[in-house]
Length: 193
Image (cartoon, rainbow, N blue to C red):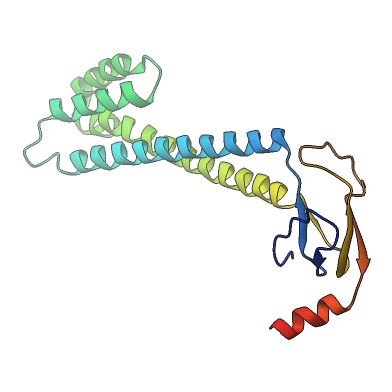
């Protein structure tokens, strides 16, 4: 692993084996990294919003027997449904629930729109957790790729010549720095410790 950054600018600079000589820049990689960071931040915010709504709805459903009328539970479920789900199933769900409630009140309790939406919200939270985890892995890979864009000294010695200039495009296996081996650089470094 590279020990320290060293940006040789002129001949005569001393470097040790493993010192970072240059850091390559890749605008496409930098842009992808920034995009992934933004996507991860947005995904974390979306997850937090879904978890907050899930917690609130669960608290209201749990307290249903206390002083919360069913209309309050349904109104909250409708608001959450409108915020998180882009479909028009709520009115149909409510209509079917009312029909079921008229036929079998006990069974209808399991299909109350607030319970159905709470279940859908639980699935959404799980989906968003998976998305955050996926983006975390993607971000780690992108950061690793950026970190691997380091050119390190393959030997200790003195820089004879810097063969590249800032913002120059390089191809794989391009020579960038000429280093004259000098074991005294390691000896001097050991004496400094």
